[in-house]
Every structure is written in structure tokens, then in C-alpha cells.
Image (cartoon, rainbow, N blue to C red; front, side):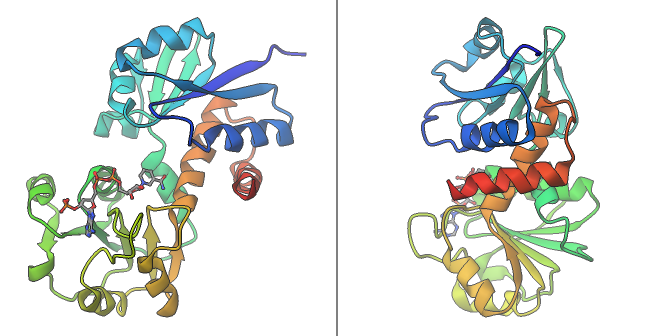
Length: 266
Ligand code: NDP
């Protein structure tokens, strides 16, 4: 039998992470000789040394070390190069290779949403930036709505159409994505209800980055018969693609998705 391959998730804090459950369930169910642990890392500059001292074959990286992971890599590939943020690491013959599966995971999660051309992102923080960049690269027409001007600067500079609440026209979008933290630990909508309802009336699909909770935004989408995905689908999408790097494509992606989703019931 081949030697057991060890993986981990780096973060601080890291106790709450669902990644070990997700990946270990896939390894066990599909017969991959691997084990996935958690590593609490305080100093991001120690990531590379820690990775090789644990003799890891791969890892995920979460807050606050995603930028440090980018810097630690011997080579960065794909979308991670565009955003300067790495969430997946692979040991390739002693070299540390970095990827970013967060935005690709989102696209994987909405694969079944058809005829998407225009997207409205609500919120202008870190997740909005990564998704906005990815959507643009994929050729979507992207607008951004945020409650305040400050975070919109990045989007304006990069050619996105941007609005604050007060100046937002009611246009039609194929998909609306909530990337704000409104609704995470409160019952707020990500934009004033009247504006939000008017925009949602003209849309077919929506998604929320928040997981583990039916947010007021998603409840409204449900009432309005809009097809939606929650943040768990996004979390699942990034996990499936990371797992595929870890096993070097040993399993069918749809199968991995099916099995990994079972772990959300644990
Ligand atoms: P940031 O803190 O970088 O950005 C938060 C954004 O939300 C800002 O644009 C902020 O507006 C806006 N906002 C905050 N509160 C409100 C409110 N009450 N009403 C309207 N807008 C508000 O956060 P991130 O981009 O890093 O994360 C966003 C969300 O994504 C979080 O809820 C997090 O839980 C979730 N997430 C999900 C993941 C997944 O895999 N599903 C992965 C990572 C994060 P302003 O600019 O005016 O301050």
C-alpha cells in the first residue's frame, strides 16, 4: 500500500474549519490513503517551513494567512496570480505550488445556472473583489452595489459599474450575489428592502456568500421564487477543486462533490 498522504488547513483561528471533515470524508469514502488535519499557525512567514516539517502533500489556507501563502510559494498558478491570494497548496516534488479555488469554486457551484451574462455583486469587500475579478475574466458584465463609497474605489478604478444605495438605478441582472456580511449575525438585508425587492423582481438567480444560515436576503429570494445557492455551495465548490489538486485528479469531480456534500450533514 502507498504511504499515507498528509494534508492540513492553516488558519488562526482554525478550530471552526469544516475542511478536515469535508476532505477526510472524501478520502475515506473514495479509498484515498490520506489524512487531513488542522494547524493553528500564528506567524504566516513560518508557513513554508511548517509545511515541509510536517511532510505535507497539500494544504488549504484560511484567514489570515492567504496572502502569506501566496508569498511562500515556489510557483503560483491560475487565478491566484490575478488576486495575489492562495488558498490551496500542493507539494510537487518538494516545491510549494499555490492555487486559488475560492472563485473557481463559486463558478463550479453555479454551473447549473443558465444564460448568465450580467451580474450584480452586493458588497465591495475581499470576497467581492475576488469574485468580481473572476466574473470579469469569464466575460460577464459586472456591476457592484455597496452601502458606502470607500470600498467601491477599487472597482471604479478597474472599470466596473458601481453604485451606492442612494444612486442605484433599478436595472435587470441575470444573477445577484450578496457578498456583504449583512445577515451573518443580524437580520439585516444587504441593501434597503425596497431597492433590493425591485432589483430582485427582475432577476432569475441569486447567491449568498454566507453559510450555515438562511439569511434575510435568501429568504426574500425564496419568497420571490428566485433560484438560489447559499455560501455552503461556495464552500463546497472550493473544497471539491482543492481535493482534486490533492488527489491529482484521481476522482470524477461530480462524484467528489456528491460525497463531500454528505459531510455537511455531520
Ligand atoms: P469584508 O469585511 O471584506 O467586506 C464586507 C462587505 O460587506 C463590505 O462591502 C461592507 O460594506 C458590507 N457590509 C457589512 N455589513 C453590512 C450591512 N449591514 N449592510 C450592508 N453592507 C454591509 O468581508 P469579506 O468580503 O471577506 O466576506 C464577506 C462575507 O463572505 C462574510 O459574511 C463571510 O462570512 C462570507 N464568506 C464566505 C465564504 C464561503 O466560502 N462561503 C468564504 C469567505 C467569506 P462597507 O464597504 O460599506 O463597509
